[in-house]
Length: 112
Image (cartoon, rainbow, N blue to C red):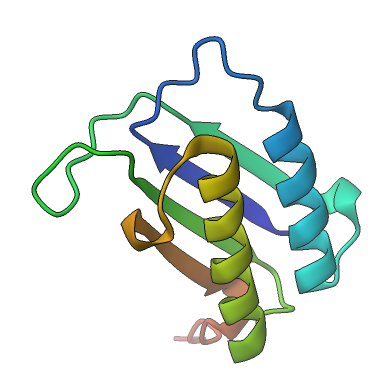
């Protein structure tokens, strides 16, 4: 069940974000190998972000998944989400930081 969370300084007032949600949900499901109905996407705009010393369009994103994350999947997710942010919201991929986290890779808790 992957969850994508994106925070950006882009203002979404009057912007139809539905095409982004649709495309990014399909992409994540395909890349991670999970059904679309298990993908969650959270998009938060109008957040104060300074990146590289300026307030040009930028974003921070993270995806948390229960399995399905390999090195190649990480690369594909970063490239695809970055491309979709650029296409839909004019956020250049060089102004996008993305964290990929697989909770199945966590060490098991100690039985102490």
